[in-house]
Length: 169
Image (cartoon, rainbow, N blue to C red; front, side, top):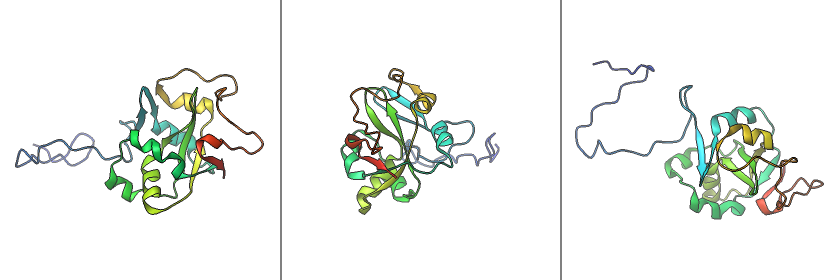
C-alpha cells in the first residue's frame, strides 16, 4: 500500500479504535484545483473560490461593523478553532443579493473572531451584481437592471447601505 494519494498528499492512517474512526468536521481553508470552496445559506450557494478570484488585489470599498451582523451568526456554522486562527486584515467579501440587500459571502469566521476580540470594524470588498451572479451556484433570481433590490436603502451620495452595516472604506 502506498504512503501517498494520487494528489501527492500523505495517505490517511488507519485508525486504531472506532472512536478515532469517527467522522470529523472538515476544516475551512484553502482548496486545491480539484475542489471548490463554497458558502451556503438557506437555498442559496456561492462559489467562494470564484468570489476570491474576482476580489483578488482589490482595495476594500467598505467598512463593516461586526455588531450589525451578530444576529446572522445564529444561522451560520462556525468552526471556533478555525475562527481563532483567521487573519482579520483580510477583507470580507460582500455581495448584493436580489430582494435581500447585502450579504457576507466570505468572512463569517473573521466576523466571529472580531466580535469575540472586540474588533469594531472590518474591511470588505463588495462584488457587483454581475460578479455575484457569476459566483452564485444556485438560489434566487437574477438582479434587476441596476443591481439593487427596490427595497434596499442605498444612498448613492454616501455609498452606504445603512440597514446592512456597511460604510465607505
